[in-house]
Length: 450
Image (cartoon, rainbow, N blue to C red; front, side, top):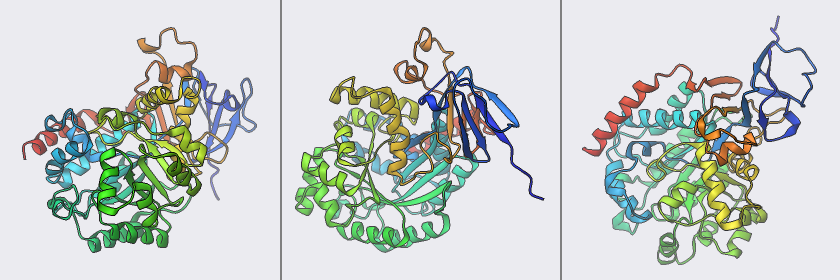
């Protein structure tokens, strides 16, 4: 006899993004099965109730670009006050000394910080595979499973060394064959195609200045054959545009088209320096763009043309980017940064708090090629975040859901992923965070002095 699963009512939130569920939501297993209007009750009996009257209820935030390992090099002395290319050149030799233990711990740190900030799905772009680190993605899969967070792990790559006209040192690159063979292995071992997938793999040559044109083309074909997505950095700085013109004879978007990536399987990190014609082409092809506001400000890279990209047809999401160029992994903080930075470009009336939340939820889901997450709706995955407004920063706030961004929320009180509580009372379930922090500090010191 099959046991009927229980229904949970997240009841009467203090505020939410849509009045359609002002009375809360009902969850069964890992799915949202009912939206409750203000003053109403669920149509069918529920087995449990969570009183959300002191909480703002939002969809789980989705981080569509990160580099987990960079949590080990936050505010790194040699990289301070530099723009992208010199910043990378100061850090490549350090990152080349990463160990499997460092990957495991930094992944836990990044994912924990994301969870605590209301994030339920995270994409990571790992592109460093020096000797001894060939199974970095496998380590990340294991750590994500322990924490119960949804992940899109991208198998990054670098194949174009300094002696070939690229930016990374030879110690950090691999051959095309090694990269493609491991990419296929990871897809076969870990990629889940079904709705509700907890682990997906994407293929992600790092950037035009670190991989060959041949590898970009071959990776695109491999992704098409295996129905997985493609990801890379593109149009982040003027230096990159100049590199593409010098190395390949074309601007970044032309290069993207030449290697077969100008399609709706692709999402890009940063996407700052596009002209109007390029924005039209990207939107027409359905290429997604992940806006990374904190990183763009710290490295002085520029501002992503978010609204123009959306108007053209591109999904636009948000990412915290690497913790060496952010220097944090706080997703609710990143939504605030996007709100503020984009208002400088488009004005206050165009960039509302609802728009910023849209980028961090449905927009990021679009970048990742998913329609089962990113919003609170019947049939969607039960990925939610609940925030309290009991800190001094919120005293006197009039509109609770707007206050999360305008007053600067930093920490969720409760976070659910796939119908399971992963954060309760502001703490990650089953994790000794103090012990993890101590280990991260020790390993960061070892890496800096290696």
